[in-house]
Image 1 (cartoon, one colour):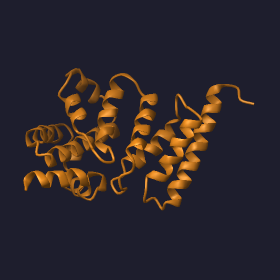
Image 2: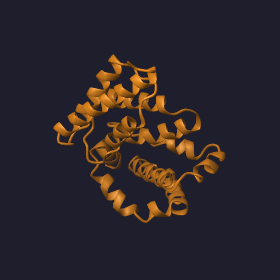
Image 3: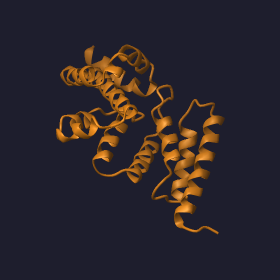
Length: 200
């Protein structure tokens, strides 16, 4: 019936995407857990080595939604496993560093900070990225600034803000708007609360 394992894999991915999307709609787009639970069960039943990009895009969109509440950590680990199957090398390192900013309970800015403070050759590749990719990197840097600042790490946050202002002007001009949106992100509530406890 299928000419290749790739064709079967693609069919499974489209099927997973359809069911996960339906569960997201049934949850009225207010929770990431129902569609992610569907994918968790599907991947355990049908291990996929190279998921389709639309499936990865759907999961990324849910994970990076600033309005959705936190969800169980193991579902985020599922997302990271999916990412590792999609990328490798330097790009994987960058992508995972950005992903950890969106951890549902303990967002982590350190991997991105280390990545940006590391090998200078990284920048040569970064500046060659298309405009949407650069905007994505800039938005990730701004989220890292938010996390670090609420952790009381003002020096690290200032270093990133300087980079943002000089290298990502389009994101920098939207600084206040994006910052206000992050203030309402329920996945960052733990960071905010811990930051308040450190100052009292």
